[in-house]
Image (cartoon, rainbow, N blue to C red; front, side, top):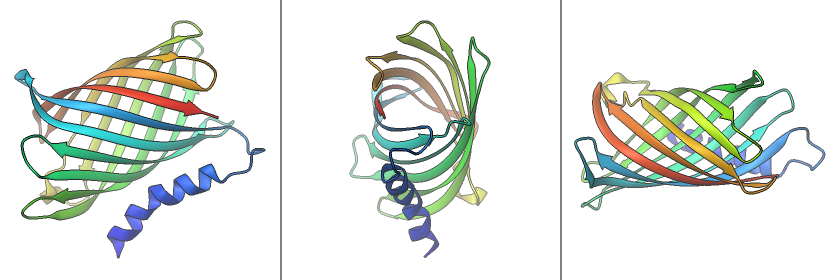
Length: 199
C-alpha cells in the first residue's frame, strides 16, 4: 500500500498542476530528457539509456513543487528500473546568478530476476548563470540521494554541469554532462539532452 501511495504522488502532482486555473500565480512547465550512461573508465561502453518526464510549478514567491518519472533501460539485459518522485524547492535570485535548492521523496522499482522496490529521499542544489537572453550556463547541479533503509545500497549522489538555450518565451533545450556515484565509487558518466515547455 505504501508503494502505491508513493507512486501516485508525482501523478497527482501533475494532475493538480496541469488542472490549475490560468489565473494561478507563477508558471508551470513540462519537461522531458534522454540520458545515455557510460562506463566511468570507458566512455564507449553504454551502461543504460534513461528517459524522464517531469512537471513543475513555480510560484511567484519562487517556491516550487514538482513530480517526475524516470525509466532506466539497462544495456545488454532485459532488466529495467524506474523512479517516481515528488519534490519541493526554492530559488534565490542574486541577479548575476541564482541558486535553487530542493528536497523530495520517491520510490525506486527494479525489474529483474529478483524484482524489488523501496522508498528513497533526495536533496538537490543547482546554480545557474544567465549569459544573455538566450543562453544560461548551468554551473552545477548536485544531488544527494539515498534509500531510507541503507541496506538497499542506494547511496547515489550526482554532479552535473550544462547549458540551456531558450528558443523563445515558452520553449528551451538543454545539454548536461554528469558523473554519478554508487556507495562511494564512480558508477557512470553521462550525457543528458532535454526539452522544456513553459506556460
